[in-house]
Image 1 (cartoon, one colour):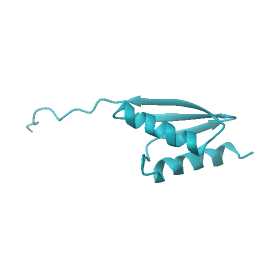
Image 2: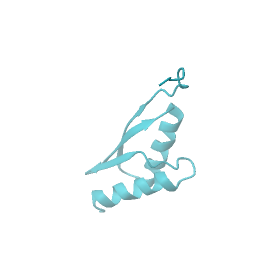
Image 3: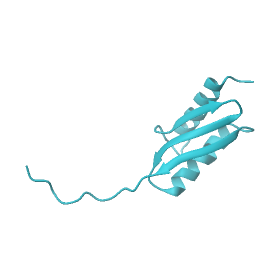
Amino acid sequence: METPHYVAARVQRALAEDERTTELGIRVDVRGEEVYLRGQVSCDERRHQIENVAREAAPGLRLHNEITLVEVREPGEEEHL
């Protein structure tokens, strides 16, 4: 069995290199047979894409998707200094 460090690195590489995600901002923690994804994204579809790529990169492990959604808004009024 691979060490948790190698599993986490493999999942992070998959998230960065897969054209569905190209994601660098998600933290991957592995504890035993469990993989935890943490970070923030702007929509639920993106969150699910990341989960799918991670599942493919770590088959047979239990995945916990703890990625949160952040609201992205247009900038408010211009600030005058």
